[in-house]
Image (cartoon, rainbow, N blue to C red; front, side, top):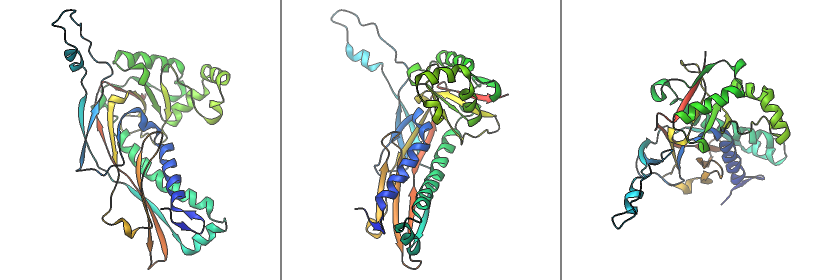
Amino acid sequence: MANTWNGMTSDNIALEGISTLETHLVAMSGFSLDLSTDIPQGTTVSTRIVPAAAASTDLVDDESGSYAAVTDDQTTTAVQVTLDPHPVSGFHLTDTQAQEIAAGVWSDTARRLVRSSVRGISDDILGSLFGLVTNANYGAAGHTGTAANFDSDDVADLRVVAINAGMDPEDMVMVLNPDYYAALLKDNAISDYSASQSDALRSGELPRLSGFRVIEAPTLPGNAENLTGFIATPDAAAIAMRGVDTQDRSQFLSYQILQDDTVGAVMTYSALWTQAKRRVEHVFEALYGVQKANGSALKRIVSA
C-alpha cells in the first residue's frame, strides 16, 4: 500500500528511483544477467553462461542416430557469483519539507534527492562491473589510440577483432567513455547517416555501428591501463541481483522490492518514520555481484 505525505506517495518515490536506476545501468545490459526480486538463499548465485556458438553434430541417418546426442552438445557454463557489495543510499524529509512539497516548493528538489541517491547505487554497480575489465581478465587490448582520432573506421576494425575472437555479431556492444563517444558523434560519416535516419544525434544517441550497440559510460574508470572503452558479448561476465529482506516489514511506512522493465535491475526501497527526529528516512539499497566469465568475449579499448 502506498503511504502519502502531503501529496507525495511512497510509490512516486519508488517509481522515480527505479526509473533512475534503469537509465544509468544501460551498460549492464550487455552482459549475462541473473536478476530477480527473490530473497537469496545464501550468499552466492549459480548463473549459467551461454556460449556464442554451440558445436553441431552430423546426425547419422539410420536407426543408430540419436537426437539426444545432439542436444547434449549444447552446454552452458556455471558461474558462481557472490552477492557482495550491498550499497545503500538515501535521504530524509522533515515534516516542514513534506509540507513544502505539498505547496509545490520542494517537488523538484525531492525528485533530485531520489535521483542523486539512486545514482550513487548505480555508480557502485557499474564501478564493480567495469573493475573487471583489465588485461589480467581479458588479455591484450583490441584497440589502442586516442579520442581525437577515434572514428567509424576504428569501429569497423573492432568488428573484425570481435568476430575473430568468436563474438556473436548479433550480441555485440561497445561501451565508451564520454571522450570517445563524443568523437563518434562528431564523425561526419556517422552524423550524416544519422541525420538521414532519425533525430538520435539531437539527444546524443548513436545508432548501431558496424553491428555494435554503442553505449556511453560516464563512470568508466581510466585505471592504470588507460581504459577508455571495450567491446563485448554477454558471455564476458555475469551479473546477479536479488532483493533485500528485513526482519519486520510492519515497522516501515513502505517496503518495496523493485525491478525495472527494461534492464531488469533490482533495488529495494524503504521508508521509515523516525519519531525522535520527526522525519521520514527514505532508503534505497541493492544486493548484487559481478564475476568474469569468458575471457575471450571482451576486448579493451585503451588510450595510447
